[in-house]
Length: 101
Image 1 (tube, rainbow, N blue to C red):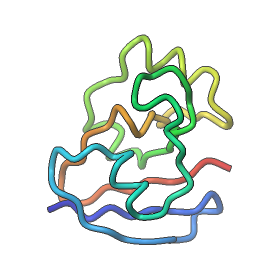
Image 2: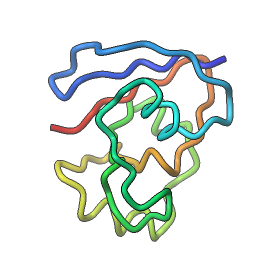
Image 3: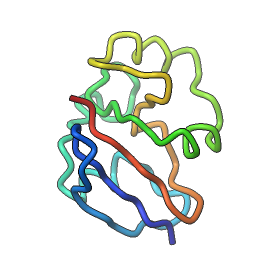
Image 4: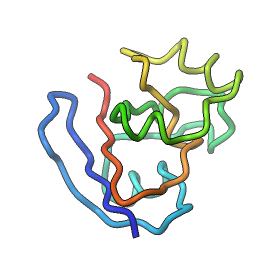
């Protein structure tokens, strides 16, 4: 199991949940009542599941593909460690996920 720490946009801890390795981060976030819509149904045609990962988690994941990068270009307050939650698989002992402003 992976412990996922969801942070509010101000960096304060909102909630910690456990998820199985390989679970989709968007599914986990929505089950934990996080403010992520996922309007496009995981088709990478919106950026409503944009999250900001910790430096360590970002570096551990496979790089975003071109389609995901294109959507992140449109995301509000995107940062270097931004990803679309619908494209991230849970893994590792912990993950830290911050909601954008």
